[in-house]
Image (cartoon, rainbow, N blue to C red):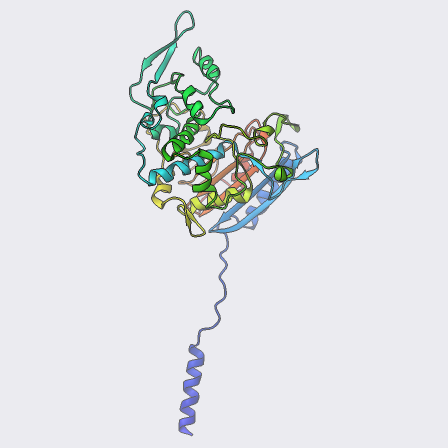
Length: 422
């Protein structure tokens, strides 16, 4: 009897010590809560209902999980085609961070240093001069370079390439060179750019322009592979971004969103110019624009970045390289920064704007210090928030670039009332 009692006790203890089935713990989002989702829906829906945009879609991941997706309005109003998850859009300058990523894969191989002169690899830029004005007859005056354009300059927009139509004399030379003609190859683009004087001494100002197109040429020259092939093999294909491309085949064009020009409050006109950029094969594969994408495709790129350079066991960049790209590269001495200050408290890293301080006023764009991001001419937007492990992609097809405060209101909806604190 005593032995039976002992055996029962042992079995009871063993049973009590046996691991109970583990329930899967689902993390509740810290940022994109139920109230945040409601705010986002309201903001996006209101822009569509006011007819200030035709259609819009947004996708947000937090801690590696999808926490928000929705779409409102139309990808094509005339065809009654709704904006949806598979809609293909023109991403314009959201091409730039992809190009920068391709470039930095070569950096990781030790094939260049950021402070190398670009002329070391691109002799087209060996004899550059700097614009100083015009003489009494309107002829352009120039001065020698104080230092060469560096690779760092073309990653942070301090190279000095002219990009405006109102610079006396210089703009005329730039327009005549026609470097960005889509019939040019990247090599021809570089040759024509090298014939036009710089607007200012390298490293002295921040001025948005064709620097990232030069990055694409640099990738092509260093790798010995056509740029479109290199970026596909080293960035897009490994990330399974199969619908991020320069050319949209016939069978996918029914998903290609129309682009709309906002002429006034509530008045949209369909663009008729840009469509053929993506439905014909052109020699120029620009690094600064030219790609189309889908929400989920671009989110894979953003997720790779927030995961320190890898996604689904595929490593595109090393963590230290992503950190370098997301670190402000603009010295305090670079005080002339064009329109960059309108983005808020940001500097500029390697092909990303980088938030260096919290918003100082409620009117500024919301976001977390350490965030890095960029947007596109058709008002698209994405950002990477490493603090909250949050990535957001906003797709819309609107010209002129966001004059309606869409990005500001979307950010406020995501993060909540100013000032946002984690």
